Length: 131
View 1 (cartoon, rainbow, N blue to C red):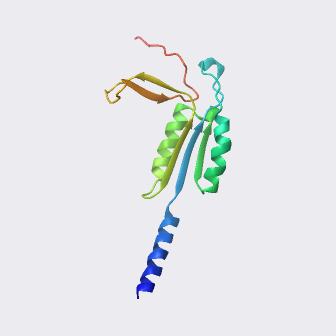
View 2: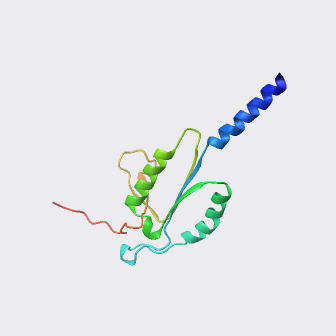
View 3: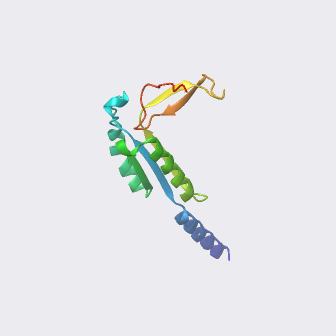
């Protein structure tokens, strides 16, 4: 009986692990538009390392690269990912892009600065709009 229980439990563990999904959202921006003011970076190097590893580990990969990695598309990809997730799923988010610091808007940062990722369609300078 003990042997049967161990076999049954092992089979249950295997079946549960098979039901889990692995998801990766990768945002990689190497070439920002010249008019944006952001310099090019080497996110292509990251992709050469990451993509084969995620594929080897059977991740479902959603890649937003360069022109695809707009603010709108990143938000939509995150929303789509959230809808797909089930309890026990594995998720990896990787952003290879510019980032910046800005004034903390709610006092939760010890250094007084919030951190932000820079999508493809962001400008490096901010213009205040006065109405």
